[in-house]
Length: 279
Ligand code: B12
Image (cartoon, rainbow, N blue to C red; front, side, top):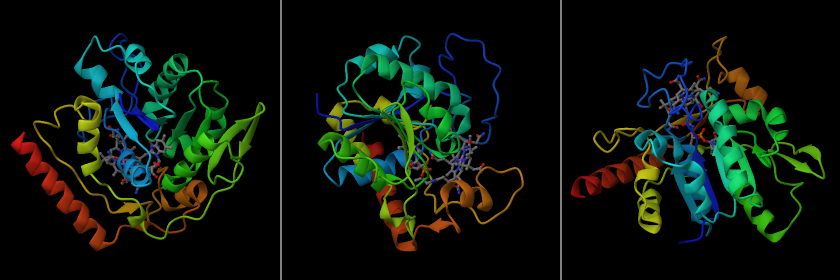
């Protein structure tokens, strides 16, 4: 089994939706995912590319999808067989509030010595509450944390101080520490959405099922290339508005991808789509 420096897990919205009667909350009618919200954040791809291009090995496991596709899929048994050095779980979308912390509990039971890292927009909002949970060691605030994550992983493995890792909420000797935010990148080009990394991951871990983004993707392999982090609008009810971004991400204006970077990513996606049709 190849080494895993960071195991990225995507939880279902509610754990375990297979055994519980659920009154579904937010609707998912307009997105490819089901009410299990099985699609993982695109940030999994940018984090993978950033870390792997610096020599670390990342594995993505879409637990939500694995659980949906196989009623017998045993999360604890699956996780216990892996040997990760760190485990990352997204709490990006609020529908995953229950699933993410329950998956973290199982991950911690399977690997008590392995640090569990949370991140995403909702984790950013609720970092103070989340860090109090015993199964969670670190929370990253913000939506552009690839460099900070790299810094955390290398510092954990070399035993260096974490006090200078920007955007990190953590615990030290029972006390909660909230490191100040770092500067935001001026363009989103600093981290690519490189689908080639996913192809390599499939081959390295001989596991296609775990990286698929949502139920039915293989039959309908759509993808979208997103151009912006943050928002220019001020919709009163939105947690991702301009003002909300100012407040939680210290972002004063949206951060865009350059046209050149978009063309590169679109070309990669077209290439990968063709390879898929050959398989
Ligand atoms: C593109 C997008 C989508 C795409 C998703 C594509 C994808 N797979 O990510 C689609 C259209 C499918 C979508 C769906 C939904 N979306 Co949406 N989406 C966006 C949008 C416009 C851009 C996000 C983006 O591309 N960011 C760039 C990528 C590269 O970064 P990222 O994925 O955010 O990841 C970074 C950080 O979040 C963080 N991070 C994330 N996970 C983790 C995990 C760890 C361990 C760490 C350390 C860090 C980390 O680090 C990453 C890298 O820096 C934002 C608004 C905006 N302008 O920001 C809304 C937004 C994020 N979406 C939102 C919502 C509500 C949803 C839905 C729940 C809507 C619904 N009810 O159906 C669904 C959920 C889908 C699911 N899981 O099944 C809200 C989130 C509010 C909230 N806190 O819940 C936002 C803010 C829009 C809004 N204001 O309403 N969305």
